[in-house]
Image 1 (cartoon, rainbow, N blue to C red):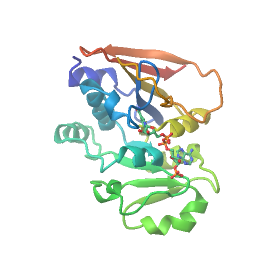
Image 2: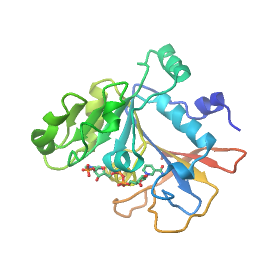
Image 3: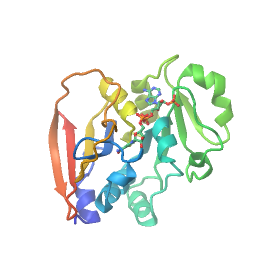
Length: 235
Ligand SMILES: NC(=O)c1ccc[n+]([C@@H]2O[C@H](COP(=O)([O-])OP(=O)(O)OC[C@H]3O[C@@H](n4cnc5c(N)ncnc54)[C@H](OP(=O)(O)O)[C@@H]3O)[C@@H](O)[C@H]2O)c1
């Protein structure tokens, strides 16, 4: 099995000064993004370890509201050893959790806010922020990017303006599709699970128009359970 040190080496970030969007997904070998509606059943022990390492390295963990709702995201917290790793590198103990919602279809009483150990961020449109942004004032910072539709490049710039250059997007598929279409994805980490689930589950990218978007294969790891950990970097 890859050790924690192996994972920190394999996923090391080249340069923290340049804004970078890294995306992480788990998929079945037949391309399903969920099993029984959630991603957790697809992953394994190493996949969970990769997720923790990627979170530990990031300034922001970015997630779409659909995933927050489907996966029941609670507060984001790296463990004490990972918080030490961050502190040793001059980073705050915890990354920021940023949620993308065009409609602000979240509730200020949701677990994701109630359990937060660092004040989260909601990214939305100017229009939604005017209509509902104040509802979240007690529990989150609201960043508005784009008047009626979300401007994801402006979001990345707003993060960088706060010193948050290293963005880890944990999905879901619609958010990944929008980031891909906007040309904002630098790296994609995909865990391929050794199972074929069939059914109607979607793929890891949704909503993006068909196009050839080549990436370079930048790394492969495997573990004893048959999982494959692929890392693709923008060509
Ligand atoms: N296998 C994996 O690694 C993995 C990872 C993540 C998620 N998933 C699964 O994926 C499913 C959810 O899929 P999904 O595609 O609906 O997830 P999603 O991309 O997280 O959620 C879509 C929602 O997020 C907001 N959003 C995303 N991109 C936006 C944009 N460009 N502009 C404005 N709003 C945007 C909107 O929220 P509002 O409706 O609030 O406006 C939209 O309805 C769940 O079943 C989850 O378990 C799997």
